[in-house]
Image 1 (cartoon, helix red, strand yellow):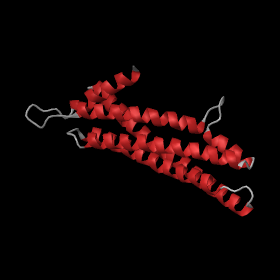
Image 2 (cartoon, rainbow, N blue to C red; image 1 turned 180 degrees about the vertical axis):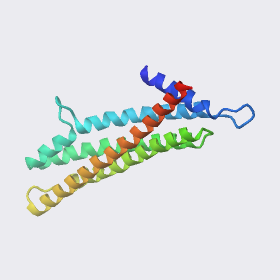
Image 3 (cartoon, helix red, strand yellow; image 1 turned 45 degrees about the vertical axis):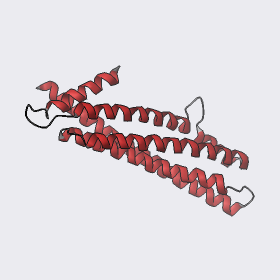
Image 4 (cartoon, rainbow, N blue to C red; image 1 turned 180 degrees about the horizontal axis):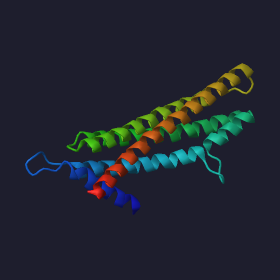
Length: 196
């Protein structure tokens, strides 16, 4: 409910400054519908991210994979790495679909503030895709190359996994920053509109 009210406020605020009786038709409401569809994809990404990260009660795939690596359990490493790969591919597909919807919204006739909001949302999603690719490559390398019998290969694969996992977390943080900036832009526009 709160999200729907926030979305309605965004439509009213961003559309308010670009409507004209004789000018081009304002398409902010259409753009917002596309963003709402993209947000459904984002909620699916969040579920996949939570499955990967886990929580206090249930360790996620990343923790399970780390534990399997520490135990030198080749079968578990490869099994979990394969599961992670599927999670990530799903996440990347949701992100790419959401990006397409955001790009369609950017092509519509909306005001500059809303275009900036959409641009920040797109940047956030692209960072997520980059992050997912890092994590996918890390899990694939483990799945395809992990060998507990070969110390040199095992160490190399673990180092690559740790480096790519760190890069994944950094990129996800950057994505959250872009998304937060977009949300702040929307909130600022709402505050400005309420003062008028």
